[in-house]
Image 1 (cartoon, rainbow, N blue to C red):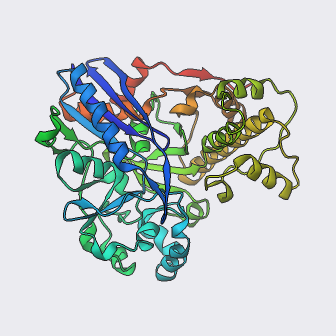
Image 2: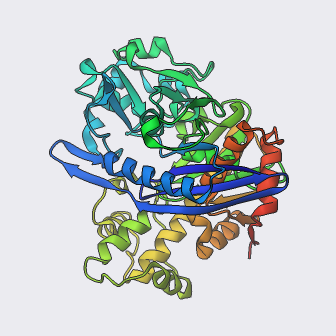
Image 3: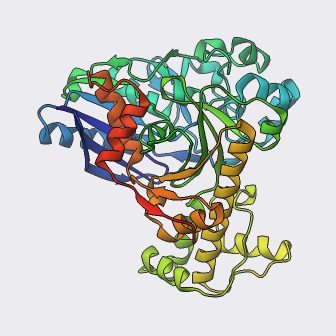
Length: 461
């Protein structure tokens, strides 16, 4: 039996999980959970990375006490955000991807490299917070020795090694889509200093041993450190013709391919080609996700602190009248703030009846997300040529019965929901494989997941 610790950092919370993997055996259990979120500072919206790292260390210490056989640690997180490093020290806390500072930089970048040339080079969906726009807006670049994405920063603090794991590096927009290496030509055209780009490593690589003062056992192993890359590893697919929805704060909707899709139609549809484990391509579209719902609940709890999401979902499911379906991908919903007001305003501006109650808001959000998810699945299949006969929903959204059923109804396909902790499970599996687990292919790892975590099936009505 192989015992490992998975550090899984999300945009609203983090967790440390202990995983145990053996022949036909797989289990994970949480040993620590902690909140995460943006903090407003004088120069913009940041992550409280010091507090987050402190919580990670406490969680890992608990994991080590709970399991003396723990032999490896793997870290995954959200993508695109980074810290600049100078003489081994962080210059400033990472900016939050919802900070608005990149807006002027987008125009500058596109003047240097037009969007169609960018897509041909990196294959990435346009998002205003992609790392290449953030770096182009960065004021501290002249001082920096290197930049490290969030999981790479945590690995650096754990081991002292500066390296960029490839699946997360693929979200920067600065990897060559053909080679998977840093794109020196693009970096030069954008006027970015080549010295700041660390060595690239692949999932399964040993990053190093924890610093002695941390008193942690085993080694630190690179996994699919973009949380979606790890989540896709743990999709319990038993057939190849599946689409996935990794549903949490964001909804990442797509298919797994062997090669990128770089057509003009793909660019126009704003689909992305991100790196997956074992050289696979995560061909997907980012949908706003449960952020819409969590922001509404946060706004309502200002007046009603006892408000519970489970009650809102029950009321939304019980509605028999139709609600308006809005564009869940509208960039107006990206920033923090009064989400109910923005949804109502969108509906009015587009000639739709705005929701009139909290239950209607929740139902409208879930109807709109299910529509966006299904549209993205269909587009992924059409643009890539890959047939899809089943949709897997993993992550927190797999617990939302109304959402899962509506996706099945709208798509006309069965939906298999779960596991909830897919990201941590994928993290655990890649560590275990690096430590000698006799399961070489992603398909064999997914079969292990399917046996250990039987998904809930939703059939179209």
